[in-house]
Length: 85
Image: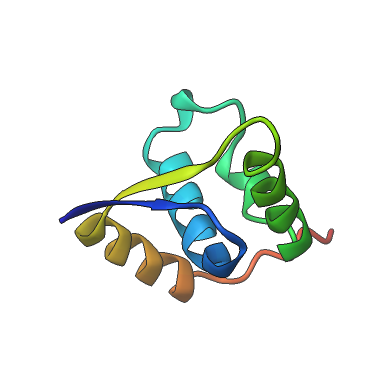
């Protein structure tokens, strides 16, 4: 099932999951990488939501729930990356 939702602070975790899945699934479609964004703090994710929902427009998520469920399971069971050396 495909659905579209507005990117809001209330769905921060959903936004992170969809974005990280997209970076893994289609890395050449973005100007960033999974390795860079997986280490973002919640504050950075909130700042992105604020920028995308500011004066310049509104951000939306389009997602396939079956793919998203698989991705969420992978993200939740992977070792946590801290970004520390």
